[in-house]
Amino acid sequence: MDQKVLEIIADLKSYLEYLRGMGIEALPATGRESEDSHSNLTLQTLEEVRKELGDCRRCKLHRARRTIVFGEGNEKARLMFIGEGPGYDEDVQGRPFVGKAGQLLTKIIQSIHLEREEVYIANIIKCRPPQNRNPEPDEIESCYPFLLKQIQAIQPKVICALGTFAAQTLLNTNAKITALRGRVFDFTGIKVFPTYHPAFLLRNPERKREVWEDVKQISEWMANKDEDS
Ligand code: URA
Image 1 (tube, rainbow, N blue to C red):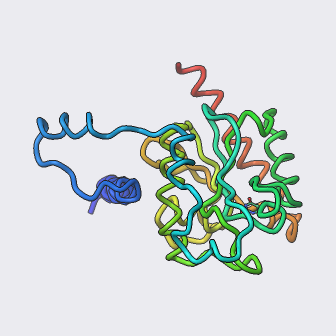
Image 2 (tube, rainbow, N blue to C red):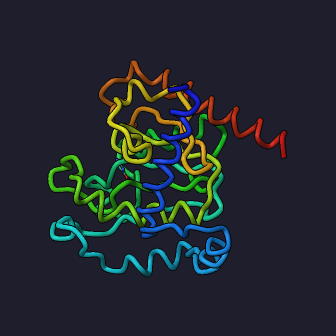
């Protein structure tokens, strides 16, 4: 099959997955019904999403967590960073990326002349897994719809997916981060730029240059977008 057709099918598949994550299980068959159903689809504000999340006990991570790390930053951010999940420091403080990896993320953000307060920072899961183990599929499944609602509320132009879990979850792929970074993907009209996770950079500082290149690409893409509009 033509490469372009394959790409359209892949985009459509990821859009349908995205809708399912938002709780939309079926699509109407005709244009008229579609107009009707759109009027029923009310987007939530970040505050409403936080309220709906409540004192979440939807997965087993609630048992050992101290705090829910919802995410923080500019509600109207054009750029969103999405990591994996809270670690020890984040669990204690209730804020994303505040430990050593977080300090490095702050530098990465500043390298493109932005401050943390100008972007929005969130994670695939909102509660710390015991011993910082990887998130499990049922945990991602419970938590991901809330991240999708946050993305809907913020409507960023660009998402920087930090590390394997963020990139694979958002792009619905098993591809390795080494194969994904340095490329641009479409996620329901939002550009996704995967790059290495800051914690990986702490262990492999020689890979920092690639991340700096990736975020520079983001910055250039956003500057070009500004010129267009
Ligand atoms: N690592 C993450 O993926 N997220 C955080 O918030 C902190 C460390």
